[in-house]
Image (cartoon, rainbow, N blue to C red):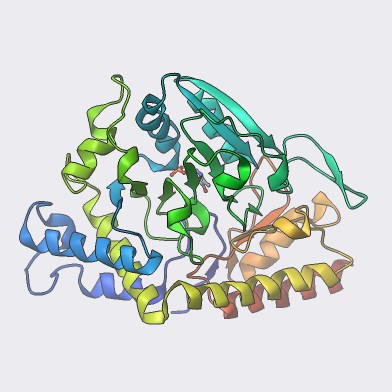
Length: 376
Ligand SMILES: *Cc1c(COP(=O)(O)O)cnc(C)c1O
């Protein structure tokens, strides 16, 4: 059975090998006679799964020992509250700064306002002109030398890949060069987590919902420097206090066991493939093929400035929205699924996460060419 090519933004395509392994182990994990989802989270079998997943992730990303890795729930949306609830208490005044690059960072900023003074350090929310070309909101990354970070902020929030707008911040700031060396950088990396190496030690914290690039929905991965733990506001729910979660190896309450197992298989798949440098090369090749095609086309239009195009999420427009339905139907007939853009942006979006092979991208490009020939 040929599987269709799934370009969904999330939940999204999984590596086929991982799905096959999970299927083979579904009824009986390693002779235990149990499915992983039937196991006690405190039993030796699951502890082994958990420990390997944590160690594999630490190795893949090069997470230093002074950072805790937490497997939590609630998605990146819950982290928009959990982060301020844990970090704002570090400073005498509850203040945090935000770089707005798209809809997800807007939401993070809004949620933080419920708990403290949330300030916008830089934003792309108004139209601008770059190199003489008009840019719509949320289609570029504000230049680093324009970010105005308060020295006494508890943290600076950055969404390093805006999934909806398709805007990726490739170079993460060095906080000293922003004049705020003591302010930890907090990164929502949900939709390009494990797509390339990250310099974890440049950040105070990285979080990611698993369902974009690391596994199934239900698991949120939090990597946090240990000195930032232990300052939760009194109103922080105990299950969301990083100190509790870290002290209990993510088992303060029942963790999302099956999602941790699946993410663990994805980590092993990445290690076998050659790690994050290798997956980055593959992701660059896919993104270059797709954007290279769009750039030479007179038919399709790319909204995002060339300097900020995401390797994971590529929004694009047809010349005329009246063609959208035909485009999507024709795509589906060729097994190219879930290309409709987010409702707030319109048009189309192709998400080409780690698990999307180059072959899927080339099949999409063939269809894009044929559609252009038929309608151009
Ligand atoms: C999907 C996404 C979110 C929200 O994730 P949920 O799991 O729905 O809470 C937040 N930030 C980014 C960058 C995302 O891609």
